[in-house]
Image (tube, rainbow, N blue to C red; front, top):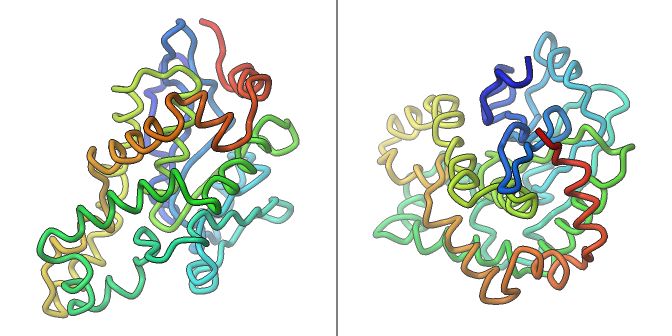
Length: 269
C-alpha cells in the first residue's frame, strides 16, 4: 500500500494545517525516503478531542518546536501524553525574526503595511531565509534536530514552527537534499505549503480584510515562494559549498553521521 501513496499528501487533521509525511520522495540513486519516520506541520496548539487522537495515532515520539519564546507562550503546543517536546528556537539570535512576526501583523493592517508594503515583504523574507542558514542559533537548533533523528528513540518525529513553512520548510529542504532527493522535487515539496496552508488561513485573510487591510500584504506570511528557498540555498552554497559542507561545517554533523541519516531515512526499491 505504501507504494500507492503520493509523496507530500496532506494528512487530514483539521487542527494541524500543513501536516505531511516527508516519506515517499525518490532519491537520485534509486531509493525512496522512508514513510512514517518524519513529519512536518504548523503549530500544534489546537490539538484536542478526535484531532488529538488522530495525531497520537501517528506514533510521534518527539516534537521539535522551532518557534520563538513569544510564539510558544502565545500558542503553546498541546501534545499526547508522553510525547517528548524539544524547544529549538532557531531565530533566537535574529534582530528581525521575520518568519516569527505572524501574530501581531495579521491583526494590524497599519503594521502590515509598514513591515510588508512596497515590495518590502520579498526582501524581508529572502533576508530571513539567509539568516536561517547562517545564524548561530539556527545552526545549533538544526544540529540538535538532525543529530537526534539518527537515534531511534526520537522517531517517529515531527518538527514545526508557527505556519510550518519557513523554518520548517528549510529543515525539510536541507534534509531531503542531503538524502539525495533531486532539487526540483525538494522545491515541489516546499511549495506544497501553498496548497495545504492557505485554505486554513482564509479566515485570517478575511478578518484582515474586514479590518480594512489588503490581504495580499499577508501572503508572504501564509505562503511560500521559490525565491525564498532559493535565497537560503544560495547562502548555503556561498558559505559551505555543498549540502554536505553545510552539514559538516555549519551544523557540525560529520560524514559518518550524514551517512547514518541516509541509512535511517532512505530505503532501496
